[in-house]
Image (cartoon, rainbow, N blue to C red):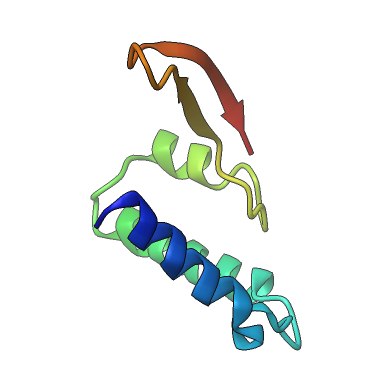
Length: 86
């Protein structure tokens, strides 16, 4: 997909009000419960150890996941900045 096509798709999505209607309630609690169940199942099935279980369970109900973002110079294709976002 070319740059112009991606921009057009983005404009179509942004223009559609159905893509921007707020949820009636937050999905945080539901998602948190699902994640806790998956983590518990992984521990009970011996796929993760106790240390990993503790690490994954440190931040209850936290929707943020750190992501490392890179910013590149478009002409030289070199990384000019790295930063963590949450």
